[in-house]
Amino acid sequence: MMLGMLENGRQGVVTRIVGGREVRDHLLRLGVIPGVLVKKLRGGGKGPIVVEVLGSHIMLGMGIAKAVEVK
Image (tube, rainbow, N blue to C red; front, side, top):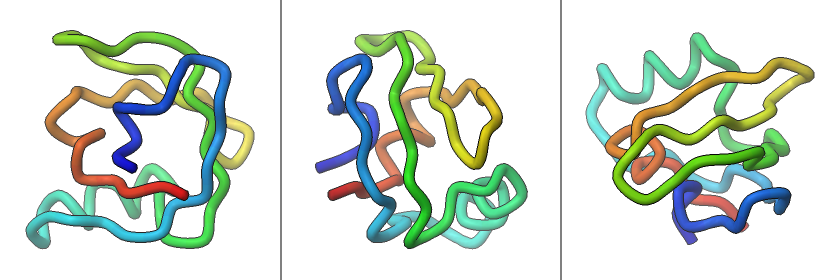
């Protein structure tokens, strides 16, 4: 399942990043990497989402969120 599809309040472990080098590098700088637990706090639809990762809240556009596969 892609990160953007998680329900608000649900969490998952990042299993894979689907995207080019620029996308992977951006997510790496934010701490969104395979093996890390992420929790979707709010958002979705056409707008950005807010997730908690490694104790920080970050905002991701839906295009980037669709590149993050979680389980």
